[in-house]
Image (cartoon, rainbow, N blue to C red; front, top):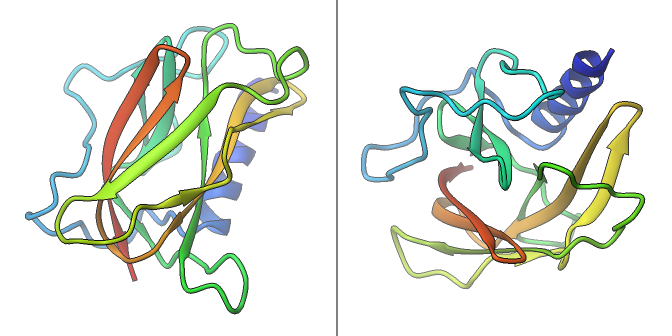
Length: 168
């Protein structure tokens, strides 16, 4: 049941927000974050493996899942008149309880590393979220341009940095 709820969340994010594991790979000029030879496995009760095309990335202090391709493509605009490209990102933290901390101290920042661009915009502090059997922190990111982006999530003293290619 827990795996089914997590799988539903991941599939929702992947299909609703442009994460498509069947697209081509990011350009070699963008050092996207790839799965490590020794894969990160989140603590129980989270599943060790994700659906094809996704992998866990991080530490027990803070983790997320990323596309194996290193690319988020076809991201929607937040609203019809918004020129930015929107992606929702879920973060997990061992022991996090969204009922006790509905406005967790998660902040996300980022910068484009292959060209000049304004900084990305976020929803501010993350929001505590849950399914019947999973608890996580959800935040939205608005990219002003496509390109190679370094993203850092911070929760208190812990941080997690990764690189993705945001494709048109």
